Length: 310
Image (cartoon, rainbow, N blue to C red; front, side, top):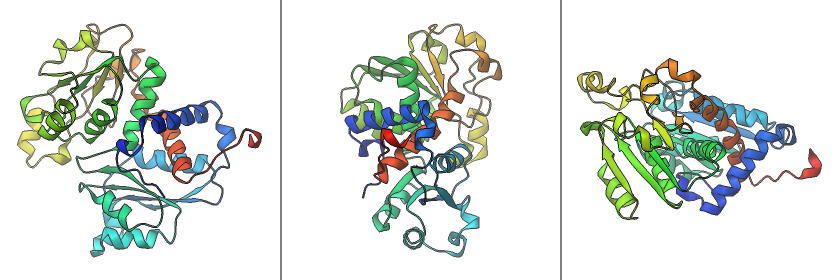
């Protein structure tokens, strides 16, 4: 039995196979419509979510399975003080696979250690968000045709942004990837990412404060929101929330084939006028999240769909 806690849980070869499967699901959805008949996915979300939770649910429903779970800690027995360990033991009796989101780093790992069913980390605090990373990789590969030989700009909240941390960990395994880290001083990438991931693996990167200074170099721009829920005081959040806003004027500085990604939700860091730019790929990215999670469910449940079943 396998779990997914981090993108590093899959080898590069396994990641490529998963992305190939996701692409096939996108092209031939009917082929997979009954692959999970009789299977149940539990979505245990201790933290609010729209895209991640609904895309997991859509993924399982698209595969013919069913879904049960809760959308907030207040609506679960956590409100009564039940531990994650006990919760997952009980859920293992009801479901075949579980997706868990929790505000505390390492919570999903604790659940996986006590679970009798595969557990997927759907986001743990400011640590990891592996299924978003799989979605990002699928989107980059499908639009750029490759995952190596790219320069990617990561902009915004790089300190608390778990999507950024996961994506860096995944992309360093591909050849000739350069990172441009764009953030204010207060939201720079954590030291453990800079030192233990980038520097330790001899990955080319630079840190800049102005988005305009990086735009012309980028093949991919990955925007993130400043996350109010990660701040300890409102004053710091208000001071930094509008630090970066992507506009048409800034887009004019970029390559004609650069793509813009965002894990969503967007607040105001990407102007709505950018939505009509053909390089804006964040809604395509959201759609890809369903295909990737369908592929992941099939992979962890070890379900193979044969050609003759379509």
